[in-house]
Length: 287
Image (cartoon, rainbow, N blue to C red; front, side):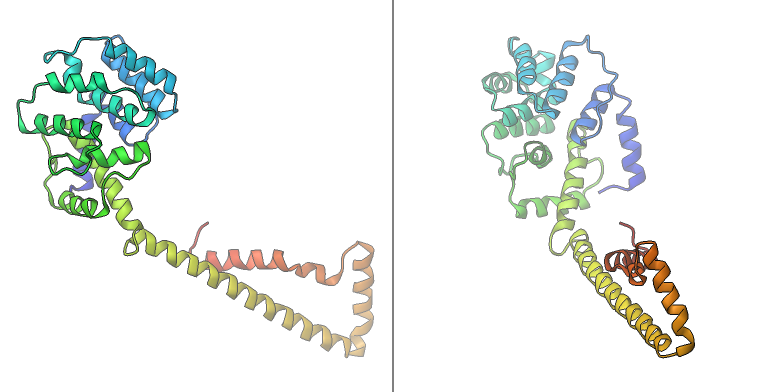
């Protein structure tokens, strides 16, 4: 889709806009740090709505929603064409079950003067209609929505097809920064989901890790058994060596005085834990 350098440069430039920086944090589940002008009413509402959405505060979200829905929908109203505001509100509508009639009125009067604004408007409408699988939708707006409301909205075949599109398309795929932020998040989500599939790298790593840890445990037990065998051989050797009998008896007696036996040094779990750690360290594995 885009090189890491180009992506980083785009994001850094985007973050110069406080409002888009806030939206980027929201979409990417980052800590909310903001320097937006809350005196601008719609920006303040967006901030409060995002915070309430993230902490599952339905009452506060409804308060924000009531504040914005008190305004008369007009085609030339700034809030009617504020994609970030509408997207955050629609996320809350789906999550908290808030009445969506005001948003529908907004979409009816909202102008769509170019292809991208028409795409955004139609996708908003289809999301409200629960028509997520539609050829006229911007899937970038729907895929992040899945993680926001914890629901699967698109079939895996559509996601795979769209993932291939994002890999091969030029960046940025849109003129709209709003859509580009969501496209980047969609790419990240699809990349992760693809790697979790049975043919994906993350899935294979998880399977390898499980197998590796089982082998480490088996090897640790084998080494432990060998240690016990070697120690037992040496003890038998010393027992039958009359010159060492007195020394052994003294060691057993002294250890008994301090409350532990000779084999307490070989407590199974302690030794196995140490062996597992050593084997993993040798192979460069970190817990």
